Amino acid sequence: MKLKVLFITASVYLGLSGLGFIMIPQIFGTGAVPPDPSPELLTYLRVFGSPLLGIAVLDWMARNEPSSSARNAIIIGNIVGFGTIALLDIWGLLHEARPATWVFVVIHLFFTLSFIVIGRKAIYKRQ
View: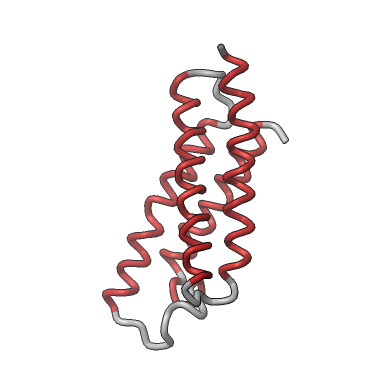
């Protein structure tokens, strides 16, 4: 896979996730959000979705950029972000998270490892 394809894939995933948290938090959080969530919880989930939209736009804008320190920073940011959420997903599974968490472990580990492998090639190609 090329870095451009990875940026596009991550952008679409993060964009859809962000929109899901913002527009349909109860449906998006099925199994994790109670049937009668408080307005504060819904607001929190919507706030959580907002930075995902920003990162989606960042990845989308970086897809055609040539090798640079800024693009390298975006790659590393994706590794940190996806790696952290993958670890949190695994931690959740160890503490009785909803079964759907397994799907997110796979997705987030995929993005983490892809950004490590493809990003490393892109970063070291520049040097």
